[in-house]
Image (tube, rainbow, N blue to C red; front, side, top):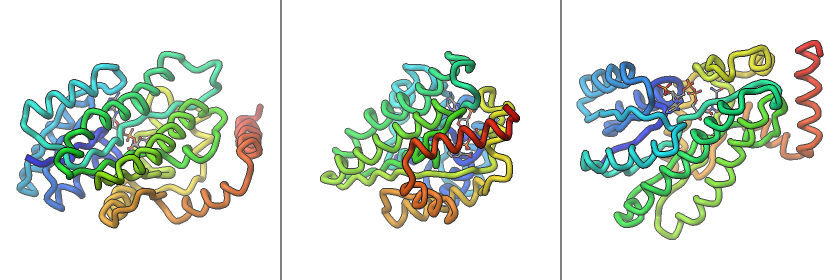
Length: 264
Ligand SMILES: NC(=O)c1ccc[n+]([C@@H]2O[C@H](COP(=O)([O-])OP(=O)(O)OC[C@H]3O[C@@H](n4cnc5c(N)ncnc54)[C@H](OP(=O)(O)O)[C@@H]3O)[C@@H](O)[C@H]2O)c1
């Protein structure tokens, strides 16, 4: 059975995406850690939309998790024709004082597992001449972000990797899209590594979209076969303007502004 696999589908952007794709009759394979939430979501989506919605519980901050997801998907005879690498966390604060293990777990989740899932699912997509991948990066992929240094760097990785993969996959007819949300009202800023004073000054007064708006833009961009999309008109303009300013200056301005807001 052909399915769309969404990582990080138990909340936020991934959950909104699951709702919208289910309405479009995609069969779904949802991945996250919160089993209760996944179970309830799959039951609701199947019942409401007459689709197959199943889940796999996996902690993608663990090195072997991507392989387990791949094997479990194969055991269920699923053919993943759309892979959405959406799961991700952030971390806010001064790098030297942040919890190192949380930073390293974030890199495993935001980067290594994303790479592993692409690597595992691509060969069948190529063989079947059918498939596409959406990798979720961020506005942070375009700007160095002092006091969110590792998260922003992880998203630069997603951006560079995805832009390259898009081209490698072109001869096979496999579409790969880099999708970049800006601030979105989800649980993102409430997780252990993000929920602190540095995180709060970052989001204060920021232009923010809902997860539904972001999911709608993601689907529209994918349906138009775009290889790149920035969610939210304001965010797209910001990236264009930001591209004219040297990164070193952007980093300095961000750092100065955040220290000022923190009264340091
Ligand atoms: N919200 C924003 O302002 C914003 C801005 C730019 C980019 N983004 C990006 O958008 C993506 C989605 O974020 P969101 O805003 O929707 O955040 P969210 O509401 O916190 O949702 C994150 C999702 O990822 C899952 N997840 C977290 N850690 C995981 C792990 N170790 N293993 C497997 N799944 C895990 C969570 O489920 P469980 O807890 O059940 O595992 C949840 O389903 C991320 O890649 C994020 O970087 C968000």
